[in-house]
Length: 351
Ligand SMILES: *Cc1c(COP(=O)(O)O)cnc(C)c1O
Image (cartoon, rainbow, N blue to C red; front, side):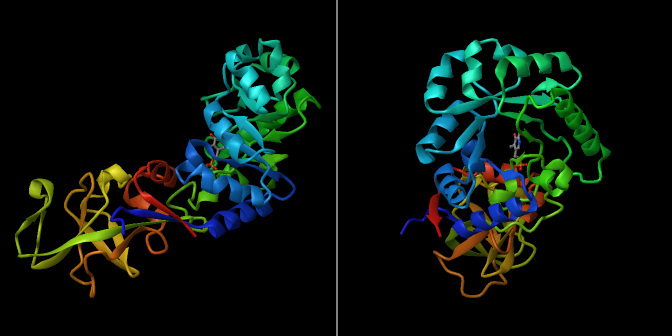
């Protein structure tokens, strides 16, 4: 049997998270953001489950991702957040891939109309899209591109108390108003935006992280079903005496005699190095601290309190006991980064 670490992926969790987001979104269509290989979870695993659950519209970042998704979902509506160049229009058109237009120059090519694009307006993120104060450019772009969707993105949806959400909402509504009926459908909300309430839902919502079991803010878990259980195996057990150094640089000194277990996982698998000396894993639901530095392929645990551990025992890195949000807080990051950095060499087991 393989000694590699593994990811156990739950179909049921993806399905339940989609149904929850869809039901909270009321009458709005619940699309899915599945860029970056479905946030590292795997597009080939996630996309067919979402389709089965009724998801018909998908967002990716690049044309290449869209073409790969088209192979999996023949009838889906697919938008590309970053758009693509005119030389790719024919390929995109024959695969029925829709660009999101972020700049008015992108709509100079008259063929744009045949692509059913989305138009992205910037209501405060200051990142992508035409800024809301350039209404003339927005009107001109909409007239030239005949868009299927008007979209904008919230910068502080994960801070529900922030007044900036209401400011962005108001600007988005005023753009919609000025456009009259020129855009049949509008979209503002990601996962956190959906949770802000019905005023943010419009005709279509486009969650990502909640589908994959994470919260937009790791300090405020939202109870999504855990999709990924991450495990590694014990490679070796060692007894160390009081005062002995452990691992690279000897950064950990045993405060008393300890039993240590070394497990087969490291930063090459996406286990963040910052977790050295402060991370936790679980064995049979019991928490064990990490001691010393995180190596490329190995991590050492203090298992003095764990009975019956042996070479080959599976250790939970993330899952039912160590939630993705707990781990994100410990690693000083967010669930999004933990998932998208999961390394390629792990076994993937679908349940
Ligand atoms: C990634 C992304 C989303 C999804 O956001 P989540 O916070 O993962 O729900 C929605 N809209 C845009 C523009 C995005 O880039």
